[in-house]
Length: 512
Image (cartoon, rainbow, N blue to C red; front, side, top):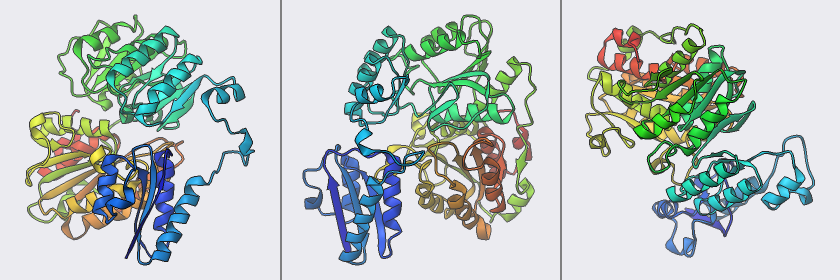
């Protein structure tokens, strides 16, 4: 057995390219395991558990990139590393080849080469992200700051600087936006329409835009503001600016605000900034009795937020309880005796949070790595309902996010399927730019295997639109053919899972 590693000092490689390299190395005959990642302390610690010697990573830092492989022979390991390096350094630019001498080496070079640009997308380690954002704002660019690990104090300073220049600072940790019909980060392909979305939740924004598109409405813009923007520490700086911008936008008739529970005084100020334009506040899990200004519609799930938005436009909402695939009676008949627990295995953090809210109302205590009730965290009791956000760091160390790499969920899925008490497993499948090009290809066979021989039944939700490159209908149909119940919304997946676990059919039609 041979374990080989190659370090690339002071080299940043984003997660999409990391995945490309990892897959290329794993396809080499004789490779048992391979990874490609930044040499953060957590990732280096994981390398040690895979057989990498301390001397092989001595002196590495979070600014370094590595390729690592475990293979049957030294020659195979060397070949795999070369294959991985080739995958990292190869380039397939859209529209054909270009002269490498024309590639800009700085932000200012890029602006000079493309002076009509008005948005910069920044994906750098947190230590450098704030500096790059300042540079972009100072060049009068709006900024989508994909990077996280930016301290709150720097976030506040960046947003104040952006506001002083009349620009948007979307982030940190803003993975989704649609501006003028152009998707940035993890974005679905949507039809232009009258709803402007302001979101402090990435997959919350995607669920909102996808439902609006599928239900025939469409969106004008989607502005992600970062998960901390509505906290007391940040004060809703960018949410207020985004709502104000949409208030003045002639193409936007209704504003939809999406967030996990915000600081009450902050969200009150944000809602007031709508200035009379119809606004729906989808504040997931917030007390339904929370007071909102006159003219603001309140919702506490993503589904009810979008249906309320349709109502504000005078459009009837579709039947969200519709499913495809087997009936409840059919999946209940396939369960082995004694199965009664629910496990949610999510790639979308906001979808996980919404599931915790909904399941908490119908079945009670649900444990999670991102719990609403801090007493219901991990490690969880063996005999417990659980919802896991598999995009959190403890699950992504040393490998890409599960939206990019669906294989990241297979081991966790198999482990929970092997638990003889588990009756239902919830899976979200997120489509759109940035996500895996065919997630059902990987997940459907794993679901079919999990459900065999009396195993737990899988409830799948596909977040996407008919225009997404993966093919919304084909993804749903592949999961259905594997035996999954496929729901219309993410919220409905939780209720269907509860119906499977409890045997209560009425839960499938319960209001969310």
